[in-house]
Image (cartoon, rainbow over all chains, first blue to last red):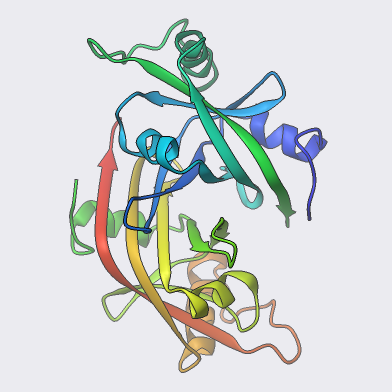
Length: 134
Length: 134
């Protein structure tokens, strides 16, 4: 059913180190889906990548995004978020460190590559849907 | 990297009871993503629903589909399949029973609703991408 990020069930899904499947539009109209880390930053769903990679490039051209986060201990509990996302490099280095802390227990992101610039996409939701069974 | 369903790593992902996130196009161009069961039927990726639900209705209007299956024990091992999908009601009742066997260990699907007609979507892949870390 339609809900908000304030829903305790949705908050629980996002607080755990469950991964997100993020989907964007390729230039040819096909859908690109991939697995990413996710958290909530200042009340908004946030994902992180490096400038120039495929899905961030897709979002810069077409901000349409959908994310699904399911509970890896109970996939019948999941949230879908549809909306748009805009990228910012401001604060993106700190953000990837917070994600590395959440998912790896690391103080800082250990996989930085020479010359890469991190970018955070904040999601403006048009619909948040929470499903839960079992 | 681009691969095929015959890739042993991809086969292993699909043989386990990992769930799929399936993405389709809503009428307004937004992306609909949801969590489903998946298997391989006669060499093709197959998902199942009931006629009239949202994502099957989307596919009947626009066959564009993307699926991600990640290893629920290691989300850094995942396969993305992009392509098109067409639905058939033929054999769809047997198919949902096989999925119930795979995911629930049940002899037959226990959640049938009165009057529903099952439908199987077989995926014609345009791209299969397997990523594995860790």
